[in-house]
Length: 408
Ligand SMILES: Cc1cc2nc3c(=O)[nH]c(=O)nc-3n(C[C@H](O)[C@H](O)[C@H](O)COP(=O)(O)OP(=O)(O)OC[C@H]3O[C@@H](n4cnc5c(N)ncnc54)[C@H](O)[C@@H]3O)c2cc1C
Image (cartoon, rainbow, N blue to C red; front, side):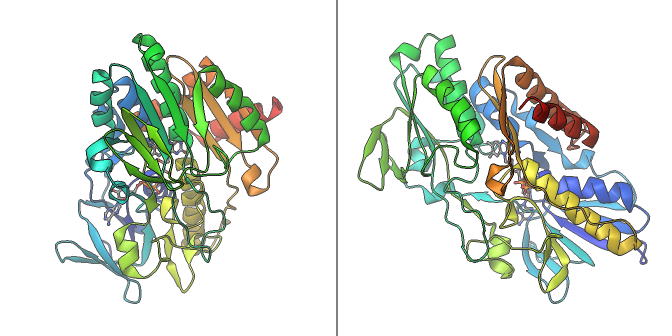
């Protein structure tokens, strides 16, 4: 390792960690040495997991091997679970007791989907949030002979001191995908007549992160698919026969699919850099106040809300530009202009693209429905997978957004 190069340690190789890595490796290669640490051996493309769970996509097609990413003299990969951060001494300790020192640390450990916080989940629940749970649901769906399907998010708690937008469900898009894709699957297999689909949300409204226009476009779609939605339902337990809520009500269920509550990762809770739930507040450059050589990007950032890959990569861009300005003495720090941009598969060749920034005080709030949106989803997922975690070129994204906004 060249001792003149700055040592960059990236904790976590998901959307945010990989985006940061690719940016700084492109722009600062001669100045830095990068070590990516991840406890997994593959980066998981989470937006494709509903397809694994509900249409049988091969799980290997959502896993990007880290070894295929780390190519070049200044890039290193440690397949380790990081246990603690000593921010005073610029050191990270691994589970096996080894340590690594850094000049700059990038925390991108994401959020834990806390299945064990939901009583009965392990025996009676299903989910789509990782590469163990998603294939398990596909196995259960193939055996399903019709009946009551209940789908929804558990409530997540946030610290009001650190988190400005506090959504009861930090990422409800996958719930939308699950309900439409199950509906499609059941119709394809002649089981829809024998089934009900009930969806619950802990929020006052379902999809509470979008504005009235998106709501007015999605509600009729939900109705036309004969899906029932119940709001302000706080999940307390999944049993063999159904789902129990805090208000004492019970929904009969033969197939209960949930997104569990989110929490910060253990390393953040241990390091004392974060709030009581394990999320870290940063300044506008994604740096931790008091430790300006530590950046926090993606779901771990307390103000990444909703918790989306799109916002995670935007934060990584801001952090990378801030580091570049510091190391080169030129350039500018990008401004974070968060927006919701996601494409919800609806089964077959149908999908709904949502572009909205009303939750951040903006005026954009629109959907694009149909096979074009579906083709875009396939295009994005394939691009991300086959380029080993690169996002499509920025000019494509900005042209697409300009085009979409011109349709308002
Ligand atoms: C089912 C599902 C569908 C989704 N669909 C969409 C979508 O369509 N569009 C969208 O924008 N967003 C979507 N999201 C949200 C998106 O996936 C997340 O917001 C995004 O993955 C966050 O990126 P991240 O880099 O912060 O964290 P992650 O992608 O979760 O990556 C965190 C990484 O850190 C590693 N790690 C954690 N702790 C440690 C440790 N102690 N030591 C070493 N490594 C560690 C993990 O192994 C992991 O690789 C979806 C999420 C889910 C669950």
